[in-house]
Length: 86
Image (cartoon, rainbow, N blue to C red; front, side):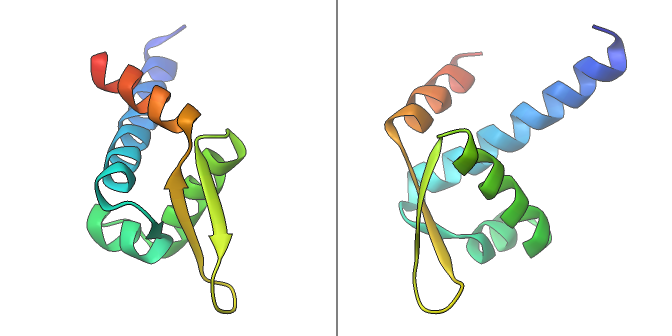
């Protein structure tokens, strides 16, 4: 791996760690809450959450209309613990 790839991977894991820690602390969370706390755009937060959901790290459910809430899965908690130990 080159330095640029390592930097991208590090940034990706830092974002994942930050978001998973927030969800672990708050419990059920929306993308708007993540966006406000992390100072990301709502679109960016939504894409992060969708990616983590597809990876099996988050479970989601739909509330009114298109609002979705996310919560850590067992796999997500395992990944969070692993990232925190790095």
